[in-house]
Image (tube, rainbow, N blue to C red):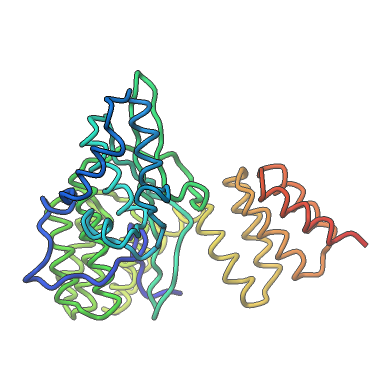
Length: 351
């Protein structure tokens, strides 16, 4: 069992600046003069239509003749920093796109997917990530702009968020990066900014609680978790962390209460079952892995990667016939190169 859970990290962050030179919120999306001039000359020249502005903006961001932006999971940065490095994660990419869209007069809005299947574990902490993208409204139609669409497994469609929440996510990311390098003072400052900018977001309060525990302040941690659960009584991260805190305090009754609430929610969460299955598979416990992969599929049956993982577990258990069936379903739910890859795997199973 993991000791702590931190959610809503939106990929990892680059090393946070010191308090003395931390970027003020108003400067995070500021366009450098050189970038603004290039964008005016290369994208907006000739007064293109809204559709043309959108297409040109995306081409400008990715094209070799434009910015040539590349995706990097740990590249949380300001717009100015992203322009200098040409690297961005989903959060930074969205910040950059929105800043350019504002310059172009496009009606663009940040969006968030709160439940994605993206995680990593480090020193007893499980980090689960959310995902950010942008939408653009043109003539009554909505268009999505997403740097990592194909890499994200999500239960629900993205939901619009405010710019305040988007900027709060920026400081949350920096706070998580500071926590990872054990700079707890900076982590506390960053999460304080995140909760100040958007006090209604439960996950940031849960993250602040984790940092408080790591700093030796259990009372502050409990207050933060309580605030998260006041905002969202079904917040699995805060429930998990509260159970851990109760365990540390030797309060078996409270720990059991929180774990019951958590278990009720996790039974309905396909991502929870998928994570359990992955852990069982890594341990060579293939029957348990198969059971949880199948439960994940029962709860969320349209994800080809779930069937691919199930096929892998069946192969580990020596059941080639069921592995092939799972791959057939994975192939049916996929397209393009992915479908061809599943076809190749199926062919390799033929005697």
